[in-house]
Image 1 (cartoon, rainbow, N blue to C red):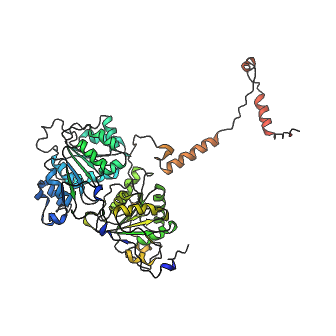
Image 2: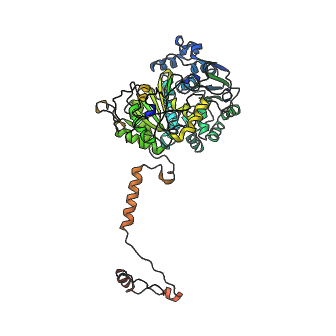
Length: 541
C-alpha cells in the first residue's frame, strides 16, 4: 500500500514533539513530603557515599561498579534509613531507588564472616526481605544487592514463580541473609515452612504502587504479618496513591515521606526524555517503527504493546526486517523470558517488544528509545513505559502511537499529565516531520541493510532449563510451549487414527436373552452388512 502524507498538510510545518515544560500532576493527587529536595539543592557532585555514613566496604564495592556519587533519592534516604527509621521513598522511575534501600539493608545484615554472627538467635535465617511485583524485578534487585555486598559474606537469594522450587528451597536451606521475592512465591515457600520470616529485621516494599495495581495487597499483608512487629520498614514507589498511604499507616511506624524532586518541579515525567506523539494507521505502524529503529544515536529500544499476540507478531515482523529482536510477554515460559532479558542486557539484541505486565520494573542501562506501539491504558502506564529510558540522568526518546479509536484514552492521559498535546499529528512512514523529529536519514527503507546487521541475535543466547515449577498448567495449556502443544496434539491424533473402529449395537431384549452368549456368526454377518450400501427409505405418502 502506498502511504502518502495528505496534500492538505504537506505545506504545514508539523511536529509530534511534546513540550513537557508544563507537564504536572494535580497537587491533590500527591501528599506533601516531609523531606523534599533536588540534586541541585544537594550539590551531590562533590559528595561521596562515605559522606552519608556508608561503610568503607560498600563504598569500595560501589566504586568497582563505577558508582561514586549518590543520586538525590539516595542522598535523602541514607541519613534517615541508616538510623532504622521507617521511610516512604518517592522518586521518578529510573532515579536510583534500589541503592536507596539496598545500602541500608546490607548495612543492617550480619553475614557468616561478620562480628556478631554467633550471637544471632537463628544464624542463616533471613534478616532482610525485599518484596517486588515481578520476576524480572526480583532478579534485577538481587543483582544490585550483590553488587552492594560484593565485599561482604552476605548470601542473597531471589525467589519467584515460573522457576523450579528445588533450587530455591536448597538455597534457603543453606542459609540466606537477604531474600528478594515476588508475593506469590514467598507465600508458597512460607506455607511449606521452607521460608522463615520470624528473624527479619528489615523489610522493603519496592514498586508498591505496581504491587497494588496487580492485586497483591492481601499477599503483601500476609507476608508482613509473618515478620516481627518492630521491624524496620521501607516503602518505595514512583507514585503515592491513596491505597499506598493506607498501607503505610497500617504497617509502618511514623514513616518519613521523602521525595527526591525539586519543590518547584511538579512534572510527572523525567525532563530529559524527549516525548513524541503520532497518530498512525494500524497498517502503517510497522513501517514507521522500522524507520525509527534506524534513527541516529539509537541504542537499546523497548517497544510496548497492550496484548501478548501483538507483541509476538511485531517481534517476528521486525526480526524478518533484519532487526535483532526479542519478545517478553506472558505466553512465554520463564526460561524464554530470561533468555530475552539476558540477550537484551548484553546487546545481542537491541530491540525488545514487551507487554506492560511482563516489563514492569525492568531497569536496563543504555535504553535510548521507547516506542508505545499501542496507546497506554492510563497515565500511570504511560509514565511507567517512558520511564524505561532517560534513567540515571541520561537522555532518552519516547514515541507514542495513537490510533483513531485511542483518541479518548490519549485525551485523558494528556489532560491528567497536562502535556498540552491533545491532538497527535497524523503520521506515515513518508511524513517529513517523522525524519526531522527523530533524526532519521530520509533515504532509509523498511528493512535494515545487511551491512548494519551486526548483532548476534536472540539465538546466540542459550535458554536455561529452569526445571519443573511445581505448578499446574493454566487453562487451555497456556503454560506449555507451542511446540510441546503441537507434538501432543499430533500424537493424540495418530493414536486415535490407529484404533480400529468398532460399532456397538444395543437391542432391547428380555433378561433371559441378555444372559445368552451371542452366536459366533453374528460378527461376520455384521461385517457383511456393513459392506453393503444402505437402502434409502421411501418417503411416507
